[in-house]
Amino acid sequence: MNDKGHGSAEADAQGVEKAQDKSPLYLRIRDVLADAISAGRLQRGALLLEGPVATLFSATRTPVRQAFALLEAAGLIRRFDGRGFLVGQGRSGPKRVALTAEMLGLDEETPGLRKAPAWEAIYDSLEREMVHLSVFGRHRINEVELARARGVGRQVARDALTRLEALGIVEKDERMRWTLVPLDEQRMRDLHDIRIALEPVALTLAAPFIPPAERRAMTERLEEALAVYPDLSVEAMDDLETDLHITCLGYCPNRELLIALRRARFMLNVSKHIIGVSHRMPADEPFIAEHLAVFRALDVDDGARAAETLRHHIAVSLPKVIGRVGELREAHRPEVPAYATPVAR
Image 1 (cartoon, helix red, strand yellow):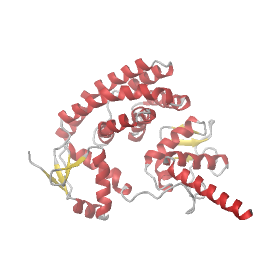
Image 2 (cartoon, rainbow, N blue to C red):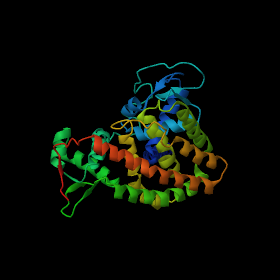
Image 3 (tube, rainbow, N blue to C red):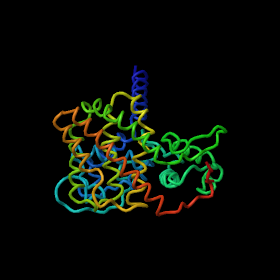
Image 4 (cartoon, one colour):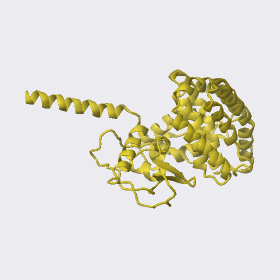
């Protein structure tokens, strides 16, 4: 009887572990951080930054950013001066501590987390390089040379390119060679047409499922950002874009609709990699007030107005993006890496 009970308990534990493995990474990160806060391993006032936390979890910044948003909505952390989050509430200043795996209760046996795929180590910088290069036309990408330039194996380079392919940044030609897709005005217009048609529909379907606390936290971030603009980091601007166009729309129950939108979201990457990096921060804030108008409509359950406001926001953003890309093309000469070869058209 005892053996049977022990076997049943062991099977239950394995089932729980498998369930944890299947939950989204950002939820697992949130749970680990929440546990560390409640247990006192992360003290009140401890400063949390995306980069160091992502490193500890062997993750990219995106799931860490999502976990932070949920912890902020739950009142466990609060935003600090646009540069990170502080544990707990109140007016205490930041405690700059070196985060360790032990503080978070992490060790090699911790279930439910995962080692980061090797391609993630090169992906962010590669995406930025590819987006900038796409402004200057079509290029053929040599997988072997890319691997050599980044000091990784060919499979790692291929995995990174496959990720870029999913976003429409690269594609394979008729001979199955990697090709960087040029970012010309017609392509930008085509992608915006998709967003104008589909994002308002996705928002309408998502609205009933967006947690009110999370929505309020997003609204507060927009209000704070509007008050201090242009004193915002590129990362903070990207967070605000992610809140509406990815996190909120991610609650849409129509998964096929979200898949159809995935490639069109490439336009968000364009702004992220140009504004404040190779291009000056706009004198007038580019989208914060427009995002706030969408959230104001959501706050009063006016889905139709929220959808129409989002549609207008996307429509008026197109000339801004085209203008920034045009200025980048005129003001900079492309630095063509060894793995890329311009393709004449």
